[in-house]
Length: 436
Image 1 (spheres, one colour):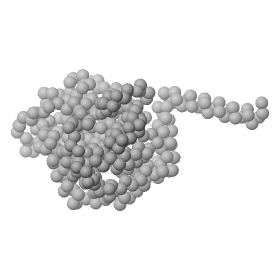
Image 2 (cartoon, one colour; image 1 turned 120 degrees about the vertical axis):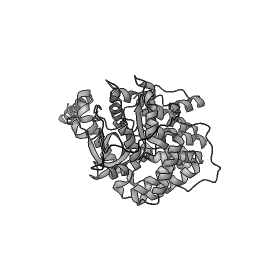
Image 3 (cartoon, rainbow, N blue to C red; image 1 turned 60 degrees about the vertical axis):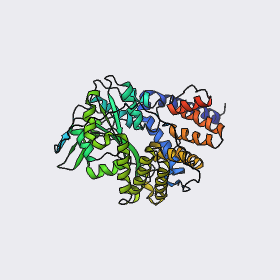
Image 4 (tube, rainbow, N blue to C red; image 1 turned 45 degrees about the horizontal axis):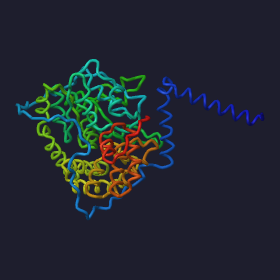
């Protein structure tokens, strides 16, 4: 055997041994996510996703379709608000205790199950672990995002003490303080630019969950636990963080001021009383739409994009699909004016309202374009919602083979995902064996 061939075998053998070592769980826990990050760095350097621009056409001449049912049903219990007397004043300081901190590292996209475990630890001992929750809400381990309604479904269906969860948009500091002052930990989803992009070294926008524990009027700060900042070796970094009210509102705006609150059934009326007009879901959407419309007149840059996007989200929830599509169009037209490092190119990972709006206004080609851009934004496109909605549009365009392929991919990334299962059954497509 020649020396060159022998050296080749040695190198290949070394690579094989290294691959086996890296794949071992104790090793992967510490370096696996770093390798994943390196792959993302190279991908982003070759094709920066923030530079991909979606240009809306501005509408359709076809009469919008009217859905007969919600494509993504949830297990939200029927709520009958019972009016009670709302306190006229709140304590200037509240900090709830009893929450068990959970970090999300070595898991990059694990803030949802990590934070829900924290919230549930306030009510249950021991609480379900982040991995127990993740097994249900994100069966494919690297799913990019868990929606609030999926966390709500987990609470309503899987908690030992039959806890319930309520999700609403249109929150504000008053409703948040009311809940905290009445003893309810609150989970919020928000946009953050506090994490540096490893490719550019600049701050980059992404969605994130926080567990809100309290507030302090004397310092004008919200008190939260942050599962990302709390590292494996030093989880205390993420405990009892203080965020100025103004900064918190700016971050919360990015997700239409959405919040989730968990409570025992006997405390439902306390929750409804604390959130006032938001107790009724339709009223909450209307209030969120009102706030978003006002903010389209006062904000600029990234915040203006978010205001228009929120207006689209609230309108589609109210089944005003044409109004929603118009608002989303405005948001997408503003997007190119935002500085590159601030562009929320991950937005459709977390919020899929434009898919609803464009589908029900018969803008199928644009839906396909938008979903494809979202899928192509990452070398690991574990985005079952985007594949599902692209399949929905492809079916309307007569491209059934492409739709079937996308449905199979969506099911692979989220086995048992109800909308995908329902559509596959309607089409007579057998559900594949999941192989995450």
